[in-house]
Length: 379
Image 1 (tube, rainbow, N blue to C red):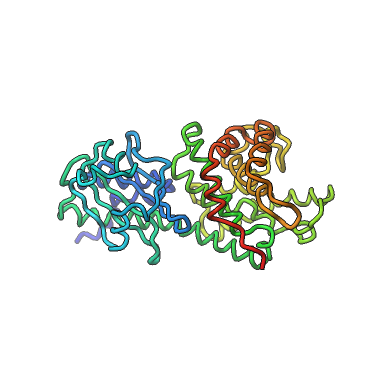
Image 2: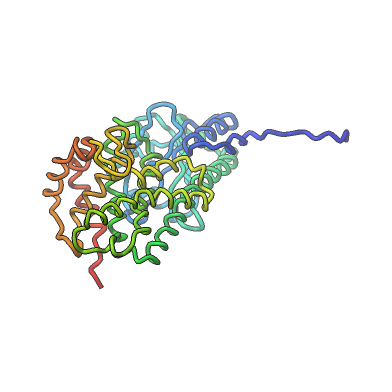
């Protein structure tokens, strides 16, 4: 031994950089191609246990993605349900076995030309999180000698995704605990934040093509939406819970919740070590700008039109719709049609016209969300 010290750069060291999840997945795909040469696409879908939905999230395809802004119920996806129940990966070396499948995702994967696949269920602390898919344009690509290495890459993808999602969920759980301690639940129910999150996702899916919103963006919007009014924990009860109309001074105090919300978000991100979270600015924007108006009359910054981040414009419409259609101690609930008509009057004036149209055009989906996430009767 000559006593020299050598520095070694591993082939996965690129993952140490501050990359988005999509960028990390595409890098892993490039390494898999170099090592194995048989994988033409990697994709990740997430599972929402509240709705039993599998939702497209990430993909590494350079060409047109066969599935985007797509969701399907796990209970109706028999093959994937079998994978989940077994807890083991699935190998299909000839996708022709699904050629008579009725599901949209089965047809679109076939139409894209994929011939074989490897599917790995993802877990975090034993809880099912979703699936990782490896697809090939060739039959019989996933032989035993390939699967040993592919299993490692699959678990690497799972760990990277679960790490980010778990961090966000832990942050949300901490905020929910703070809400309960502060008796914030009286004004901002769990059902309200669930509905706002799902309305926001509906709107974003409708606007995805026009605004270039990918599934990663949409899922983070969905995850962050419950924090839109977190700043209200910093308001006094005399303002927050007042049953009558606020005075001018009280209304000015109420406006401060967006500033307080931004401060709370910054503190949470720092405390949880999530400053480098790729979509952290989306979270800040949601908290700080969701009361801006497209004509510049909103608060606290008087932003206009596209100066307001699209995520804040989406949350504004989702939040106002739910506020108006929900019964509170100081108001009756408006009907959906009354509320849609009111939002259309505000479109292009207070609210973003595209966001309003996207929600109005999703009437059936809105009704389904309302049925699933009903307010609990007062105890």
